[in-house]
Image (cartoon, rainbow, N blue to C red; front, side, top):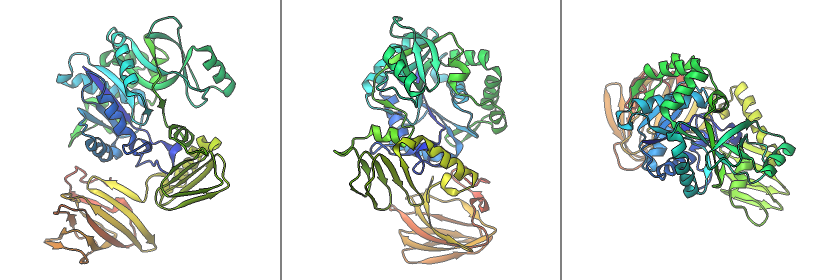
Length: 475
């Protein structure tokens, strides 16, 4: 059996302010109507013989990822939740353990490992490359896919292949990101491919190599999977055991050390969308070289990426710039400095700024809430509750709430009371009172929530009952 493994653990800090820690790049619709993880799942499904995927994601993203896959009709055979990020080698290891534990997967399934946040325009070429790699993978090789370079890029690692060795060529060397002159030499030689981070190999074969080359990592992953617990449709890896796992990429932990690595060349319109410059290059521009999204007005502007999500973005006299607007942040930078956005995110994180973690609109399994305003002693949110959805039965120790129904019908639980509210009707939730709201209707329920008190953090939520398995949690 061929099982795609979708790795969805990254945060995509170079695409801030669109990508945030709790709303990462793979969950953004950057290239069209579908998000990157949706495109990845559909691409995997088009590979002949591919089964339902295994997904590995951050536990904080579980409902977001599940909802996005459901939106394109993809049901994973397993979704593994990482309590902490430990890079790709452990993520693939727990996926391999899950595949081997699945009776329907056979004795030694093959894994097709795919990052969730890449662009790949030519799906047919991708499927052909996978088919070309199957014989090698079945014979015990660890297959990686190298992208045929289109330019001497300095933002990618490279793979040097043994020339004249057939379709699945032995890997001669993995090379770190080069400077511009070295990258030009690599491309001119014809021996080098971009390192895509996509792989194909047997689940048991990978684990055997990991046990030989990184035994501590293998042991920690086996312990974390062995002590995992089922939570709704998710598998929670044991936090203590997985937290003790060394962090490393599959390249460093296995592929650079094994003698079984082979590479297949792939030309399929690939990009890792690793920066705003990469996104600019991946989208069609106008006659002046501008790529625009949203409400944009550009005057005497060329070669720029202008991205508006909530307000008008107007520019005058810009050349080769990036301007990205969201409700709570605006990024302006020369295109040549796009890689340095991660330094801004590091400063936001160091200052514990909320803009590093989340947008004003926060997705929830029941819908979303949007922060509208806040100040000393108050906070205002808009709750958008999906038809049939129910929030947790909860209480707060340090704030009271006043609800105003804007549209739809709300069924409210307040202490021992249960009652309905329609548009323009209100209710109050005193401090310490157990409460819940649900949408019994068939249209979106929207509520303005005015919180007053001394503290408004999400950790002042005591969940008593929750259909999404979050009792006692603040996520």
